[in-house]
Length: 497
Image (cartoon, rainbow, N blue to C red):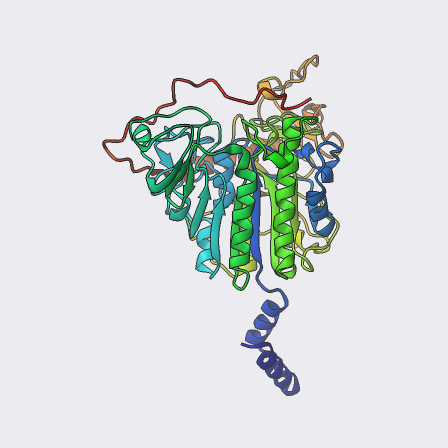
């Protein structure tokens, strides 16, 4: 229905005093056109690594601009404190345990995300979007678990973390670019080494080993090309950056010897965000494109301050992420959302915005568009956001609950501070953002409520786990076992001060 014909019909209906549900629905849809979606998922970037959360070093002017032009989320959680589980939750709207995913997959893993699961790409592709994944996948490196098996029409990137190795079972492109004296015969014979990872195009290895210093730049170029090629049609771009996962690497333009390597890497990622936002704006798509920026877990090298702990922990420093969203004219500029929201919420939210169909299988996310749009008095849809990762945790309003005693999580131990002897932990995250004062003894009713929520969640997930898929390996493929030279080849320049 064209805008002109819609206006005519509405005018006739108004004259006749008729209220048409169909016309009302069309009018509402016309008022909020479905957006393109750019989802930028950084690896290992912490809450305190960005200017919009108070960082002075590194400098992140492009991310700060997105926050000024859109909405900052102060209490946005991911589904896992490490790589694969977090990505599974993001793309399926499910807690990673529900879809059977392990926290981290490796090149010698035999499983991946089941293609029967509906991903964001599946849902948006069925809704008429063009779909692309550029960057780190980490949900299965062989069929039937590659991005092109999961709703993405194209893929360019590395299939897992950059500190891993190549699986000799990977398909090698005829025109593969090989470096460091490696030959196709070497790869087929099973040669591999740690920190030497392949670049895939769709389902083939097109480069090996990847020049990691160029990854951020090349991901950006691929992403901008996709935006330019599909600016006349709805598109979904998923950009899971490799950086700032160890080993850190930057392009020549960002290799400043006067700064730490982690600072350089974060600043190059910030540059990448600026390039993509500029490409959106240059194409005249700012008012029709939702840009989402967040991280897969807390900092490994950088800063998760003022939060407690880092990557791998279910204290907030491991799972509460720097997050901004911009959709010009639809998300209020310069706004701040302090309600609890999560990466699992993107599936139902994007279904709502795109007109896509949610999967028939149970998911865990909730529609957070009322929060994103700045609706008055909008509240978190999560009465209790429960994570089973590690020893487990629950976030509910101001409260963060841990059904285990302080000191059990080595990543969350505080040097020189004696842990509380109480058998569980409860923190007021508003009054005590660093989770330093266990107030469980003073709030037994809150402890009981959140313990019940946790126990019920665990029982439900355990009763309804779904399987992963088995990777298809040629019978004659050499072993994908971890290489013997497992010592990390990290740069010797200090990664942080």
